[in-house]
Amino acid sequence: MNPNYEEYARLEDPRFQPTEVSHLLEQVLGVSAFSRASQLKRAAQAWHEANGDRERAHTKAVFLAPPRAHACAPRLVVYVDSNVLLADFKTNAELYLARLANWGLELSHIDFRLSRVAGRSSAEMDSSRENKGVHNARSAVEPSPSELAYVDEVTSEVPLDLKEQVQQAMLAFLIKNRA
Image 1 (cartoon, rainbow, N blue to C red):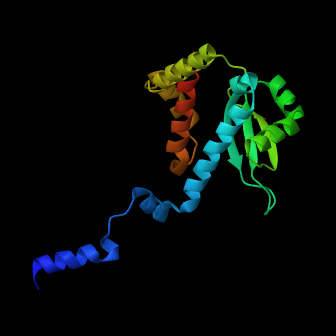
Image 2 (spheres, helix red, strand yellow):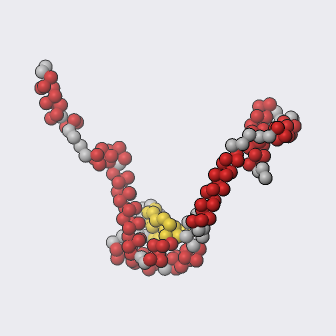
């Protein structure tokens, strides 16, 4: 067979036709991954555009949760940074649902939750990160001879199959709690 003919036949075969990347990703990930991502983006955009500066300033995260009932619309979960605003937002949940419906986003419910970083300033979060770095650097320090002797003495009656694990745990505890 002529090599040129095989190449032409291959080019006409649908399996070897060029395809768009999005089509390939849909085959691998499924259509639902793309639709969920676009729905989430649309929900976040709707929340930020349908509400005022106060809501935008205190919203830490927005995501869509699956509906609780089979044929219902999805729920919107909004994380806020203050307990006071959490109560205020929960009070106005129906108002927010109406605003989002006017924007074109149908939801069954809005859940407001307190963010993990609620009430912390950026300076406090930075110092918290620095403290974790200090702790990690301190935990890399080797145990002192007195700590090793203490752990050996305390674990002298521990069964041999557990002794090494118990010693490692005790040494880690002692190193972590150094003053």
